[in-house]
Length: 90
View: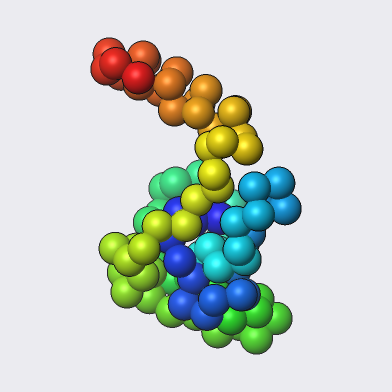
């Protein structure tokens, strides 16, 4: 689940809690990439079963796709804790 729009709307991640549409970009990665040791290069372009991929650089700077914090207090709490740990005001 990535925080920007998918190349094909309706074929990405969404949220049943806050009703975010299924338009978020996703990437299928191996364990090494998931660990963060290799930067992501591609996102899924359409249903995963089609095995179509698109360059991540073409979408990363585009519109954001995130859950609504109003329905997810755990997201806001995580953001606040991160700000405090970094010495910033939440």
